Image (cartoon, rainbow, N blue to C red):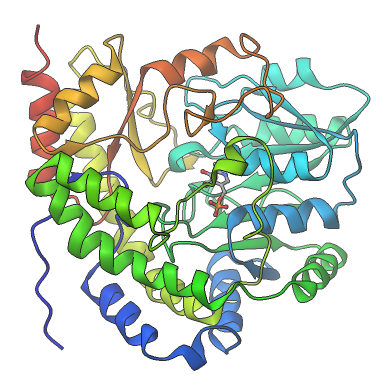
Length: 425
Ligand SMILES: Cc1ncc(COP(=O)(O)O)c(C=O)c1O
């Protein structure tokens, strides 16, 4: 089938990894509802995933947060346990902790926007049980130091690899250092099936418990699955082209799709208010495993592209007033740049507004609040304002530049031209 892809807006979000073959696959799968729930693609994805990362066990779920729920259960998390994780994280990494009635303890970020090993030591108490380390935007955290502290205080280590599929630390993939790790195939992650996730471990006993957790779950409903299959098609054929014409038109179309529940939202209103959503945890449906497998086959191409675009941004912006937190060369790490973050003293609301006028949409939700999206209820997340000032400052001053496969060199140039030439007072 020949399909013509319309001109789209430059955007960080809204199914950014989708290519023509992903759309054709989603269209085909819509017409094959017998393949939607159970099927062989689920085990195939689990096998390809564990083979790629070189671990013993990979167990799939319908999201990264569902995979984290399974890991917390398997580790025997109890009410009152303290789980240390960095501030400047997503509320979907916090909800599973709250759901267990455990206590999230937020740790400061260091200069690469990852968990600060020194602040970690300060935050440990006799109730600490788990440290969760996020490799923010695909830049590996200071894993040696964190592991050393985890061992010293007898803490389990979970790696939050929602941003870091393919990134390496000392030539080992992120996700292979702790007791367990989880990955996300969310709509704007490294690879995407709109929703999806994977739990990983080398520990046989833990794997058995995670598997038992998975087996007790049901599949999501047909309506939910249908909604996810529509996502890459409608965002790429209607929403992004509409944004490319006029931001109001894009906003109206996207708003209508959300209101009519034709498209799903990445996080629900309940989750922003601290309660789990009934969509999670569930099994990963076969049809989303097929979308994820198609994307996994393009992982190296995607990540090479991300690195090229990131190095272009770095070259163009290094002599500007923007701070580039992910630039320091370090032979131990191989980042994959899910985004290219820059920090600025300018009012980022105004910068994004000016960019929108040029049809450049840079708001990916990772901004303004130490727990994103910005309208998350921090009190419900047990975050005390002022407790991680560096993370709060990062949240206020960050703009994430897109690096995904649909950003061409010309798009990246348009973005840097805007940042360097159009923001002068
Ligand atoms: C850092 C981080 N952790 C965890 C998650 C949860 O992943 P998912 O959306 O697949 O549940 C996300 C994504 O939203 C994330 O960005």
